[in-house]
Length: 452
Image (cartoon, rainbow, N blue to C red; front, top):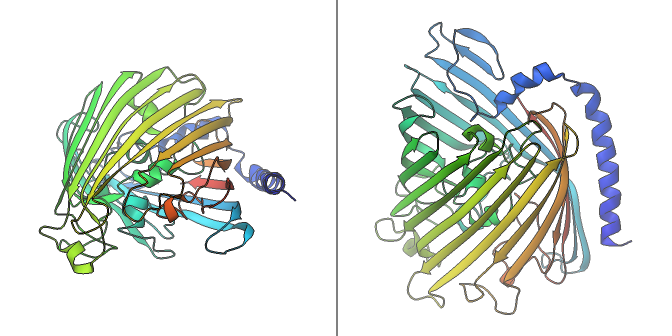
């Protein structure tokens, strides 16, 4: 039986079971959908009038004044994956297939405001964390996954000088490095496909610790931060080693220009029917220097980046039931002296779009292109340095206009070898792509998502 036939059989069986089992229990009307839209936390203010406890789109408790409020939220993403490869270096034989279930995210989120309406906070983490916002450059090299244990992600406070979403603000603590819009501008459950793009997972800087200053107006959103560098979540200030290396310093900045529409439209990667026209253009940069004050690399003897510069330009256009997003990403790395490769440049391109065929069913497609420097450290010039992926699939929203209950199925096709330069990128537990050294890889992903 061919690999593509296997994919179709798995997809048909799983989609049938998923829709039958869930549809009966989630027959929610459109009025309730209006409440559930609040799961997009960027769309509404954390401040709600009145005190007590209840559910107004999220579970909450608060005092009568409304200036002290705690929201309790959660996310579950449960997946079935079936990966089909011709050759696997790990298994050493042909026709290697890998199938199974995975709890991609089981997250608890606590946020709200305290003392006054302008002082807000957020603390959240995952119990399982195979999709924890890490990547190859930072998450795969500088910090791995901690399966099954509770892992802290965000833990920060923010003061808005002129109110939520207006004027200047300052944030401090542990948070995502705000460079790539696909990672920073959207929650993990607001994506178009089962998982963010492979380009995003390769380049994104993960979580960091530091201070960020921001500014927001009707058309411009800007922030700039001073931090410990990418992939430094849950580290001590003198942390060192291949798994938790602190940079001497990191500088991160991003600017977004809203050309048309409103900011709330870009809090997710889709655009429901009835939405107004919206357009956004932005870019971000991140630079970090390593190895002078924190002896992370000298202490381990592991070759690592002495200087790392990440940059991106991206944009999105959304309309009445359709959306298009595109991004270009680049990274320049300069290594310690004394190693064979002194520097390398890697690039990535992602283009995706979706369209609603009905009020509750969305069809989408995506292209990922990774263009890697074959002269980089630890890379083989004999392997492919250009990687191309196509993803096609669909979303079924059990509640129209809400991500609260959503079933997603997609298939990822690798157009060439998907294990570049002898390794370094794959396998990746976040996207599910495992890597094939001889031919195109095919990955089926099915996901049921609940946000509460």
